[in-house]
Length: 64
Image (cartoon, rainbow, N blue to C red; front, side, top):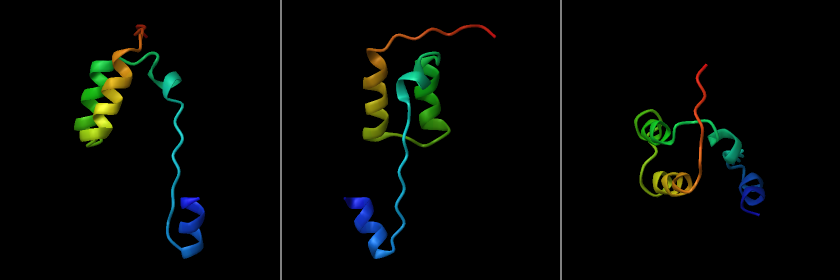
């Protein structure tokens, strides 16, 4: 509803969809969390959400 109302007012609205489980299955979680802060500036609540989500998710890093 919010995006439709924004569009009707002429405001810019964006929607980002992520396939989070698939994207995180082969990434070293510590490296990812560090990159979120350093590269993308993601901190606070958003960073805590990622950290919480990753804390109960297994991963495997395969050599190239």
